[in-house]
Image (cartoon, rainbow, N blue to C red; front, side, top):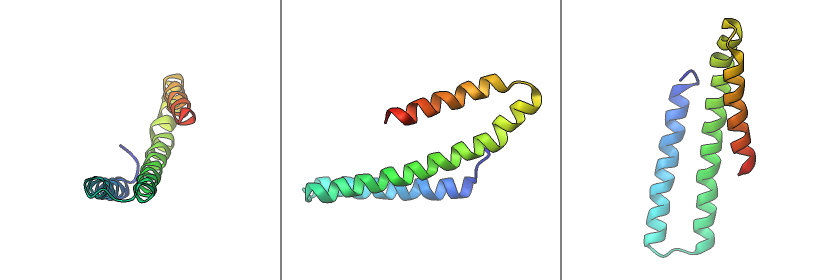
Length: 88
């Protein structure tokens, strides 16, 4: 992976902590809206991680593929990810 690995790890650990908190909230039968807000917070962190990973991919892997003359495969990969992002 060519993105900022330390940032990605930090953010994933943050998401893991938030998910642990979510589990506790559900176990404690907390207010549904509070749980929904926490779910959205986790989703926001994961979107940031996804953005960082994709930026790293474009700036390194895709750029290298263009230089090596193997761009189409990388373009197809990125398009598939974009298609998935737009579904959600």
